[in-house]
Image (cartoon, rainbow, N blue to C red; front, side):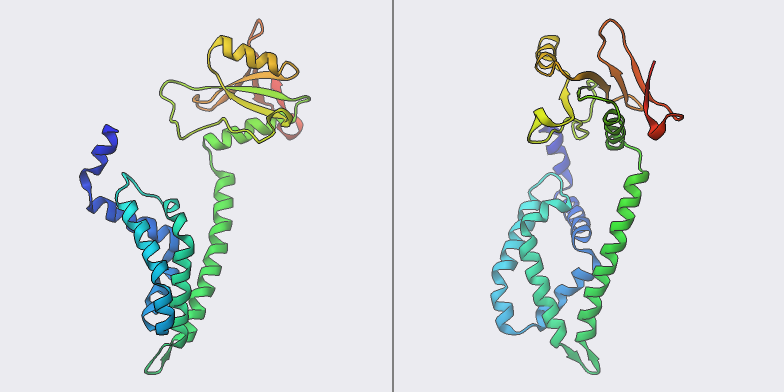
Length: 240
């Protein structure tokens, strides 16, 4: 809480700056322009969009009270935002200023959004595949374990300085049936109970905060490191 209060020192200017960046990430420039068309929309449409505008305004007010903001915080107002965007596009559709017609503007906004969304999706997938981080380390370790016979129980060992946002331990709804069960390393007694429950699985320990993260066999009289063997098909793990 003290650190959160310190973050509020720049309020409200800091919040307005972060909120502006958040809105731009969430809506992008083309959809932001669509709001200008609201003023040219038919009166009936503007009247019916008051509830959507009020919902969006309440979300913005709530975000101003937060210690920090992010685009995903606007998710509850998604329906209201896109209702207003629809009204704005309808306004552009019927707008005519001298010789400039709004219909091509509305069509251009929609086409630009479709094109940029597709391009950004491809860029995101490509960047994610090439990125190196804790999530890619978990993915690689999981893929290596899946190439081994049998199911696995993986204890995740964190350092005291571990960033809680970098969480490795996520499991499916049917934990007993999934090939890899992830668990936090707790204390010897609790870990031993979990190992006995999953006695039919191979047990491993991930040193999550090492650089790079490493996987070791549960020390039953010795430690077996597991590393990727470049010469093995598909990067099959090799123990040594």
